[in-house]
Image (tube, rainbow, N blue to C red):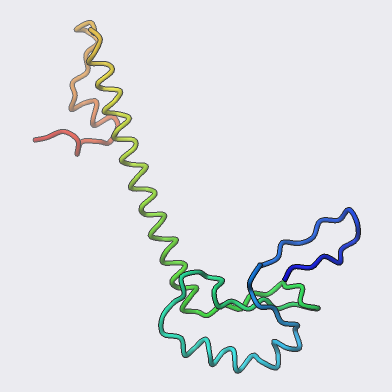
Length: 132
């Protein structure tokens, strides 16, 4: 689908492989039909690009038409992934603190430098790790 009629030495813009493309005139003529088809969709696609249509002068893109239901689903997937990432980062931080505590407990510490475990957990905002 991608073609390169750029001047030698210039970098071609990225292309969306597998996404149908239309000229501006073709898109203008098909706009109502595309809109009707997109509105009738009831189930989102797995990928944002599955039902996308690339539009631009001379089929060179610039505008991407995507069903609203697919955009909403993609946003929800991104938000879920972001939440999961934050949860995993929190868990990693907890594991790091636990490993640090284990390392410290493995070697003797002068009594005057000991920090109560509760105070240490509070300093790092990890009170939930301490059992009541």
